[in-house]
Length: 238
Image 1 (cartoon, rainbow, N blue to C red):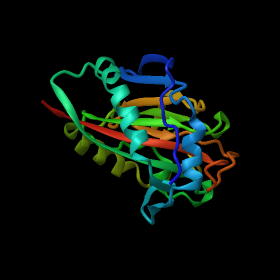
Image 2 (image 1 turned 180 degrees about the vertical axis):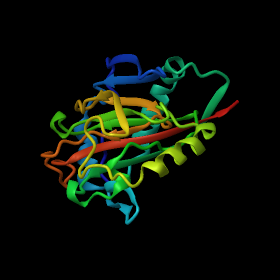
Image 3 (image 1 turned 60 degrees about the vertical axis):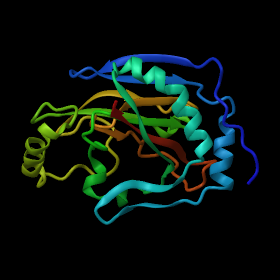
């Protein structure tokens, strides 16, 4: 494998804001990598992408393992920033999982579970890193509040009530296509645009969904499609 430069930009731009009525932090870092094209080249030349979805839903596209050097570089650099932004105390780094991802499913092929917001886990110590390696025209990510319960995050204590409410709503199918705005059951609370080489970090328990325009030119080619690097970083109590 040829050498790729995954060094960080020495002068990134940071911003922090609360989202929704629950005020969950959203940390954004612009211009993350010194040479983001290197990660795109790796995705095009080295990565082996496979479908990440099944008949019941899942990520609506293809995924491949990200290079370990990239993951370690980003996690170690962002760790102190994340601890401060999210007020973490007495925790230590646990595990980090990372994939390169491309949305490829056309809107008409989505099943119901792919047309509504979701959470990755209810663990308050797991964080999602979303690194955009595509143009802003592909759309970004949006965050939501469930109207019936008022929940913007799902914790283990909230899960039964949320699932019961959603079960009552299941007969009312979400509109065809990717969710891009408010729906009958979910209210959009915040958005992150897909800024090239920008990184968004939020707790994995926040209700969210990709905000993908109906005319987005989806492609399985990393140099042309909606390429992102997705890290799930989990901390443990010290």
